[in-house]
Every structure is written in structure tokens, then in C-alpha cells.
Image (cartoon, rainbow over all chains, first blue to last red; front, side, top):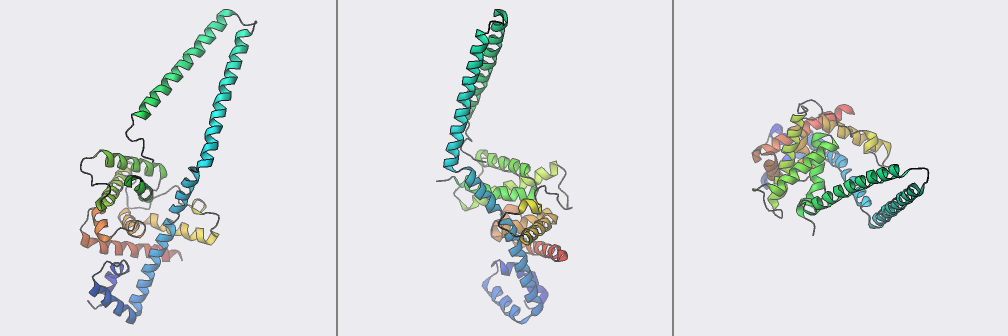
Length: 145
Length: 162
């Protein structure tokens, strides 16, 4: 293997260290003497470096995900949600109490409104329970995508 | 100890994203591949060396299926929604750096799929030629020449911009 064309064809294998040792040595010797092949070798290395440069940005995304999973922040978020849910329930109970004790609204309206509300709550609970049951029996639940 | 499948997901997502050019598609592709890895009967053991190549092969094939379904499997440049300078840049980088990265990314997306995938499998995912042959289902002897030709095309795309 001596001609420049043959050497050039194998340059990718050379830079990836995938060639047998004898060929690697032959190419190294040739590169020391041939400007044209040396230039192509350098350009291929440059292309390879550039690809690695771009794709390194993927690491930024991983870093971001780690931040999103940060435990202290997660705890804050959990407490935040809990407080919002509790206060929402309290507000709804208060509104219900005001509604029931309001003398300007007649009993029929009160009863139908309460039944409507109760029906809605039961549907909501039903869906929640279905979701919990599905989540418990999900064999893929440990896979994080 | 983290499941080997979970460890691979970031890398596999990167490949799916680079092939399809769209984040949502990449997530779908990853989902499909993961499901297959969990349910298929002929899967190599997850701790084995063959598993990574097998998993990437599934991801790659799913990406191609996705592109075909969307009729985006052509040899013309791909339009990727996120590969713009403003999306790639992080604050520590200079404008020139991020513009360079954007140019490189854009050149990568101009490659034919079979050129882009082999360059990424080698230079990003670090597969050996033998492993690349398995992922792409091609003879090992043709990996070097295919990769070399792809790099020459990419070199031309990059130098034409200079």
C-alpha cells in the first residue's frame, strides 16, 4: 500500500485507530513525508473535532435535567403544591358555607347546586382512583423517559 | 444501581434527535425503542456489550420509520426546528463560538441520513467499527469507507462556508 490514493482511503481508519498495526505504521511513515496526505489527515481530524464540539452541548441538557431534579427545590415545590391544594379546599368549603347560609337563595337552588357539585367531586375522585390504580400496576413506572 | 437501559437513554435520545431533527419525534422514538427493549423476546442481556448496539439499532430503525411516515425520509437537507444559533448558545460561550456550532450543526443536518448517522455513531457515541456495523446492519468492511466518504462530504460543507 503506497500510493496516496490508497493511503487517503484509509485515513479515517487511521484516525480512529481501527487499522492493523502494520498499516498504521505505514501510514504514519507516509504522512511524515507527504504534504498532501498530511493536509487531508489534518482536515479530517478537524472535522472530527468539530462534530465533537457541537455534540458536547448535549451535556448541557443533562446538566439542566439534574437541576430540575434537585432535592431541595423539589421539596419546596411539593410543599407549595400541598399548601395550594389545602387552601383551595378551604376556600371551596368556605364558599359552600356562604352559599348554604345565604338566605336569598331558595332551598331548591341550594339542593340542586350541592348535588351538581357532589356529582362533580365524585367523578373527579373516580378518575383519581383510576389513575392511582393504573400507576400502581404500570410495569414501566421505573423507566424515566 | 441504575438500570443499564436508563443509562443509555440520554445517548439514545441524542441519536434520535440528531436523526429526526425534532424533539417530540425523538421522544416518541425513544419511547418505542424502550418498549421494545422491555417486551421483545430476543433482546440481549442489558448488562452485555451487545445490548447497547442492539438498542441503538432499534432507535435508528425507529427514527427512519418515523421519517418515512412523515415523508421526510429524503436525501435533501432536513429542517430541524431547534438547530439555530440562539437555541444552541449558552451564556458562557462567545457569539463566534455559538455561530460556529450552529454552522457545524447545520452542515450535519445537510448530510444524507446515512452519512450523518455514521459520523455521529463514531464521533459522538464512540462506537467501534464492529459495533457500528451491527447498529447499521452492514458488513464491517464497509464501515470505514462509508465513514470516510461521509467525513469528506462534511468537510466540503464546512469549508464551503469559510
